[in-house]
Image (cartoon, rainbow over all chains, first blue to last red; front, side, top):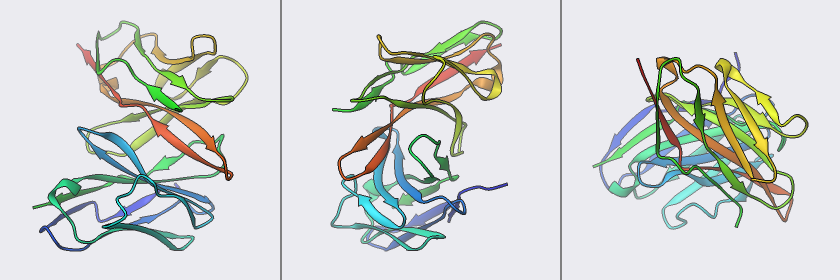
Amino acid sequence: DARVTQTPRHKVTEMGQEVTMRCQPILGHNTVFWYRQTMMQGLELLAYFRNRAPLDDSGMPKDRFSAEMPDATLATLKIQPSEPRDSAVYFCASGLRRDTEAFFGQGTRLTVV
Amino acid sequence: AQSVAQPEDQVNVAEGNPLTVKCTYSVSGNPYLFWYVQYPNRGLQFLLKYITGDNLVKGSYGFEAEFNKSQTSFHLKKPSALVSDSALYFCAVRVSFSGGYNKLIFGAGTRLAVHP
């Protein structure tokens, strides 16, 4: 049963610490999205990769956030330094063509205290 | 601007009654439209999509959606609601940008509450 895997599922960290979230897309999918979900803002698109190349990260605060795909099986989202306002659920999704659905991971619930 | 709107924050319906969750969109060109459902502490699950063809699309768990081009709407429907349908529902549209890439943009979500 193919699925998108995200780790960790939960993370509590102190303000100022570095946080790294990982995502394993479904094998063969060439598109990866990172979303952030909060009560106030809903689902925000942070970054978008196709064939491992970052095509759009305009939704991501550049000063502290970075997203990479070291290889086709791993996408990472890093926050350094973390702040309490970064507390949210971060979702990774993968897909293929524009006319196909994206599949979501279970999310990483981040709490910055 | 290309966007998708869900005008209702919450929809309440009695079990056994039909339900409708509304979605309208604004995109240039032909829209690729999707509905997702999110249960508590879970990721989003795909329900159905409209790409082309019949305006009435059938999906998972008995849900269907009707694409209406003139009204730029893609409302989610189910003939008979179940308590287990209570969840957060998201409408999304895939939009294309210059440079050959595209985004999946979500509405704000509608919370469906089905009462016994």
